[in-house]
Length: 424
Image (cartoon, rainbow, N blue to C red; front, side):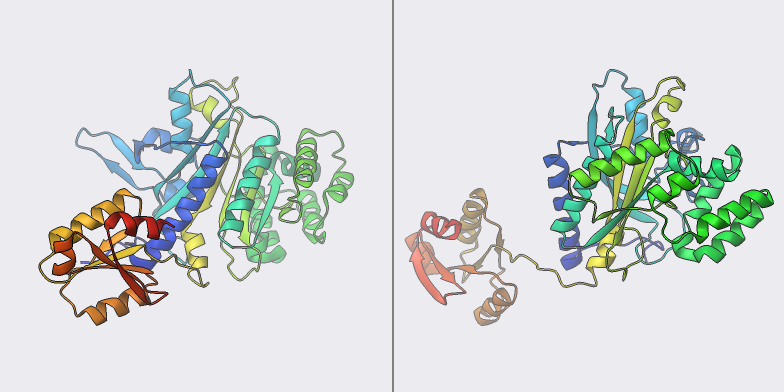
């Protein structure tokens, strides 16, 4: 009896921290006016393997199955394509529409730290906003989320349209743009030597390869340097980058949001802005989240290439966040109240606990089988401040003994008085 490789069960302290991350994100999504959505785990294989979907690498990692009716199905590998399906199936939906979803996805890929086969994704997407406002608001959301989680981050961003304009200027054929972008995206992982070696295997002309080498040799090129070198003035991609850059500066995120001209992300459906989030210290190298603009998927899914649904989204990687938090101390909030029955008074203990819970107080009921001294010591270790003792004499009087562990004091009170004191 064992778990499938790359899958885990969560409980205890780890599950408590996961719930804290999840509740932090949920609270922020709703503060930013995103509506909750829950899409299907099972989807038609044709949808998940659509040429407008995740790309060759993800399709190789997709779990495929056949149902008893002989239908070809697959488990969702992200939350984006199922979301696009919902928009496509509901043409009467009012835009702009903002949704968030937290749910499990499945990929049969290599297992490593922060990368599992069954994992939780936390996504937020906006349909119906074409300009940089959507991107900037999601960047604000991400910055605030990691501030609340006490994780300093850097959000690297770029624009695929802009990068495509650079590749066009270097002489890379349009049909090779995506392949070259995905190789350039590996710069941080394999270095310029590794990227150049991979580029030379793509059958590009010597002139194009030489110009790409010049691009790689530029030391952290600025947007202005690239615009001048490749004569991009007035190009649509450059204008999009400039508009977002101005907005980022205007909302005070320029220090966190850093422009990276080599970033393109692995998914093939991105059409404009892309971004990825990393631990600012550099100690943890895997991505903590990412996203971008994908204006074409929904229209293509409904067979209308002439209609664009401007869409931008972001995804937070729960497993990567947990892998990082697991290496750092984190404050755990103490539980609320412990009710301890002494003797044959379990009905009265459960009745008192019900009243406390009805008042919104987190309450646990002890079994009453251990020695009182050990039970109190365990409560103190867990940081429980209030303990309620109910013995046969308290039960006979319809009262309980409220013990304040921090003050080492106790008093005989009614359950109503106990609730008032604990709440205060």
